[in-house]
Image (cartoon, rainbow, N blue to C red; front, side, top):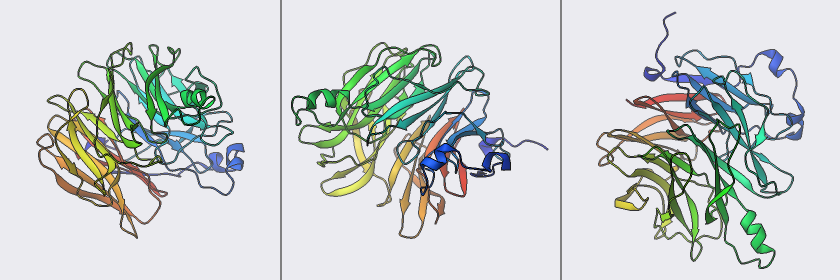
Length: 399
């Protein structure tokens, strides 16, 4: 049979087509989750050979990977051994997969611990392109029973693996002397130069991050990593902050403020931003906030320091949430989900002139439970990915 290129196909991947040998009985993890349904939150990435990989949890709460070369046929789901780890796979906290040089591949996830809102960042590494994975290990050196959650991972242009996460060690230290001395959590990071075999020290990026929103990562023009997250500014304003990390991870730039909605809320919105490098310098960014009483997903261009430049525009959907953004040259794509009271709708806002103008495109809808959409890149083409209880959908949106 002639293989179709994934980049020209709309792919629909069933979530649960497991062989009977894999689904005969629930394992210990399933017993721990009795009465609950496995989280839908998943991740996908293209390997260097153009194969699309996805990682998520099956109905027995086991971590699995699955891959496709053409968007029409998929490998059987392969369970990846994680011992007795419980794996967060819901909303903004999801397993992730990334590919680097030298046939390196890594899977990361947050393992919830015994106390509420605590966790460890766990990782599995592969040196054969994902054919086999190591046993899971903890990425950070700090081992307190506290928050280490909502990790994001990326390889930079030099092949250094960056892991960033939300961490409450500074809050714990501050509250021993003054319960009101510290707002929010902190952003920490570390770097591995050997594909996850060893890691450098835990490095604090910034104090006073929001507690439960994803961290957006994007490449920088010099081959490093840019990061954007929801931050707690003075007066309990929950806007966004931005830094860049040098190639190889030796230095972090000063933090800059990236949004100015002035949203004052004494809670975490569980709603992180999206970030993408722009072709002509700076970045494309999307985020949710309430500005002058108006809630909206917003888009803006940021300069090289992460400061907004030009107009800030609301997406053309009052119910838009959990948006992601990616760009290739002058093509900029924003995807999001919204709920109309009966169905969850998936939409894209697409620009061919570097974000000056956009057109809306309907991608699909479901009456079933659905995950947040995100974008993945393969060469000069972009794909939107989202998951429901019935399927994973992959649709080409640019290139």
